Image 1 (spheres, rainbow, N blue to C red):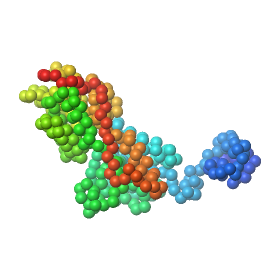
Image 2 (cartoon, helix red, strand yellow):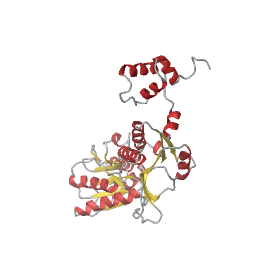
Image 3 (cartoon, one colour):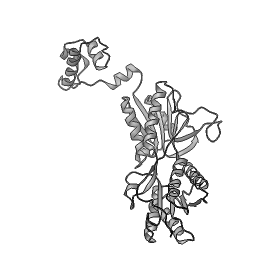
Image 4 (tube, rainbow, N blue to C red):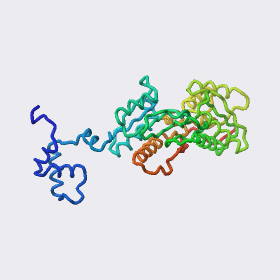
Length: 353
């Protein structure tokens, strides 16, 4: 390799700046501590820039005995149009700590969580973040020992613990407040005068369904109203069919809360087909605040936002605190992150139909 094409070294920088390699090392690693004159520092930095010198990440890793990488294990977050906010926020926090994120998306590979963790451990990641697209509650993954772990959207139930994980030590875990978000949605419909309120729920027993149904039910009960929950599904067609049945039946609702924005889109379509004005005759609230979707419906959808960005940020902050041995503070155990109501155009004051 010719001298013109080889990668410049710290020795080259030292020669260009007229200083020792030790001085170059101190300046480029930010450890001058008053021992190197400002003019000399500037000369070293100028020489490094002129030569195009960059520090070797591998050499730094070997010296510090850490890889400066974080393993992110996901199931579709990387390919999801809205839950990707979690991965993006986590990666931004890692970048501020001078770490790269290596992502293993389980939907793209025939891997279990344990397989992915082993692959990342072989690459000597400094910490692991396991984040699922939908909220889950299940066994704590069996991961390689000695690697700090934080969870997002996955509430673990360790062996020997009860179904909520009590009785065993848990890694920091960040989950959305599905229950509180559903209460906010129901409260908004009540505040705008609605008394005939229905919820179009999912057709399974997932954690999100259970928590959101409970929040809706409790908010209506506190207001002295009878909760009406219809098992619909998760897609636009499910919302359309369920809403069409409600509109054609006796005592149709004036307010509808939906388990998901896509179900709410089906409700808006069914209302348009039935000649029901939204929000004039019917108010509709969704859940998720899916990117490039909720705000583009007609009318723009009022919805409850899943806090993926905040969960990703706080989860990665907690992971770095764990890696540095710092106290967890408020981000210990299971942390429930608020799901805010996003007001748009699909909710109005109730009027008789």
